[in-house]
Image 1 (spheres, rainbow over the protein chains, first blue to last red):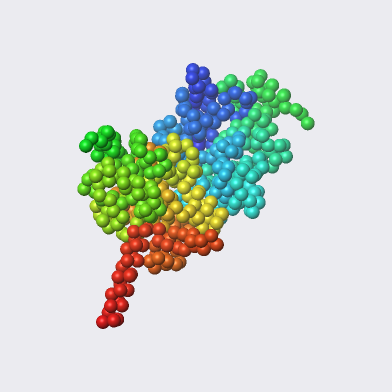
Image 2: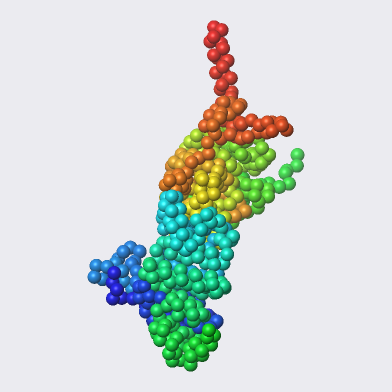
Length: 270
Length: 293
């Protein structure tokens, strides 16, 4: 591994909705195994940022580079096929290959990330089949293993997510996004909409899986407690711009920007 | 004698329309299994009754052709009879029920039991041309999946079948991979007939009138039915012979014969059944003659 280079490098990136920017001038580097939280209020551009990072939205200005190999294996230096590639230069086929093999995306609403009327096993197995797995027994075994890791009872493997509770759906979604061993996972408010005890268990699960697999994660949340619990670094966004960034503990314990101070002080102290 | 009030163009469709359809057919043949959009026209039957097949047939038929039409393998059902009569009238084509004498065979489900030969054209009436339709309702997305050869989704369907029933339960419209590239829906053809598509000497044309799509399999093209390594494709099997002609290894229809639950199994291919039965009686009568002589 070339750990001297970041996995994802963002420079002055922005996305425009009509003639207004959803987010603008965002810059950061993400290193392998690092968890980055993006916090801010509704409408601050968090989800737009996630959209351009994962190439679901167009990058209208600036650049986003990701460390990967070209589809034909060319390029790269020092004998490695991997290089930092400008995402906007990749073809649709290459971007979709990244979605299949390198990137997970956990949606806030599990119904967006799952096929609600396909069994849990089928949902977890689909990325494997998309990557060319053609052996039913192996797919099933892998799906079983992952459902166990996210604490879904084995006997529910053939039930559809439509019959699952919100927390279980979210755990199936996480299994589906980790089963193909991605390097980078995007999470959009994965715990909101769940009650507090389920949230805590889910965060615990995410934290242990991330540590175990050495994943790089970009997690969008409006909940500072979530950022505190699982992230190494935090970006604070407001009105489409990053107003503060740094180590999570530093940002939350010693906020510099006025808005961050307001955010931090608005947490109910127990 | 008064002239007929309406004079139809040969093959019913006007020449421009036939050119449109032929262009789509040529493109379909050039890219086996790829669904080519075309401007589906009105024909004198409701959409869903085989209008796609009729337009394809109308575009390739001429007065020197002999047409056979089958519906569920039978030559004598309403739809088959009326389509045959239609082309006799508008194209001046001869018609037949014999597979070996036909140059064009239009079918709704079955591929005839009698092996097809070169220079024959098999025209399928297709209701749903998109194999991924039930899994992904967005046409924009399915087209993209075809373009990028992303067929993981198709396997999800097969996975679900095995998880639920212990085997792949699909017995008709069983998805196939054509020429190693495009996944294609063989219309409601029983999976029993899927192996006949592989390396067929006949040209196979598919027309979906309501969905406005045409696709094709040129002669001698690989057509592979999808499956898992440990659960490969298995065509439907029948463990009994036809009760009329005694043939084995053919596709059987269950025919209810009384109201006490009685049923018999007979060939769905009526032409094949008749001829086999006829040959058998001839064989028997010559046998009897030999015995008496």
